[in-house]
Image (cartoon, rainbow, N blue to C red; front, side):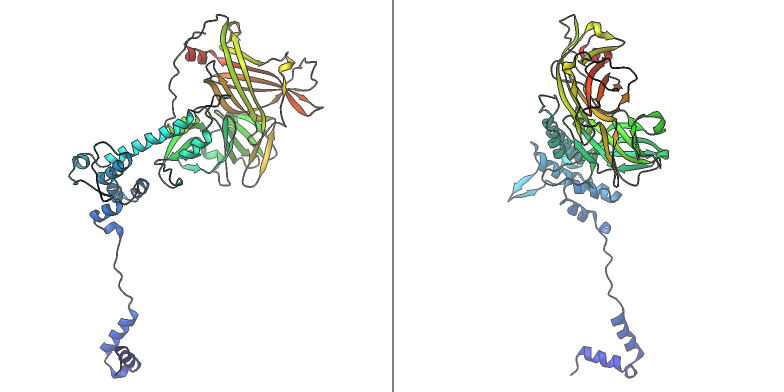
Length: 479
């Protein structure tokens, strides 16, 4: 006896012996694809979706909430977030009962769930996690370097926090572009951050540049940081790029790029031929760097707590005394100078024109003159080119008060200029170069002599001018 399939093959082979209705049925049996049920996760009942979401961690819940409005409302469920909150922080009034290594929830009619607005426990969880994260990171900042007075575990703290820096370029139409993945160069008292690429927006249409510190919203030390997860932004500085080449300070140039400086500590490299951005370099001093990169918000910069004035004016002859200075000169990849100076002081008669003068290196005292290692310049690079702009460098200045507390700190690029004045020094025969820096807190004046015989620079003068406003606010004085 022929099987069913055999009979079907017989009918199909001899269609004349069967009716047209049977042939149509056979054709539909072989040619019509099977009907697949239309299953969509969004069409599932809310109860089932809530059950699925209850197995997700906090970061996944936040990501799911970005899918659509329905998922956002379900991902805000107080029951799910209360479970995460309780398992993470173990409050005294825990609502979970442990039985056979399982957690059983109290009835959903619990006041802790239904008496709160949607998303309440989500906010509480994020707030508590953020506070614990900041405490853990700030604990590392307390370890200070005895020579610089600055945190000595910055790299470790950055690794623990998952900290990175990004810049956001905004054009005149309000469109923003985020530039990430910079190159980092760490020094004793600062870190240099370099961004470069090939698809920068046109310089003529840019209006502002914002520098942010970015950390994961919910960092997890047990696994690597997810760059695609929710993140927290802390505004460090904002710069105006309109009329950049006219309103900023020109630091130097080589055959390919021209460098422009924006305060505080930003360096923008512009291609000479195209008038387009080649790279952006930020010089970040370690003083309160982690606080500025973590504790601010996306719109407001971190504001340090005001210093409690401590009037210390026992000696009427001295305005400032027993100050310390740590000075680094570098060109991003190469270090030219790393030196500390102790026992700096200023007499009251040296206070004039709104500044207190601290003479670190005296022009007439050649015993304190010292050489610079290498040829001064700032190194830069892009995807294709590398270069070195000569006769400029980055100054990292850390001035400590008599208690060893950072008093005035900055990291900024400066340029050297050939002086028209004669040195008047019999010990050195060469050209005199000057390099100056100024901000709202003070000024720095450097003088170099170029020795052609040894091909090196000698620092023959270094003077700091500290603003009286800065001193008065720090000590409560009235200079």
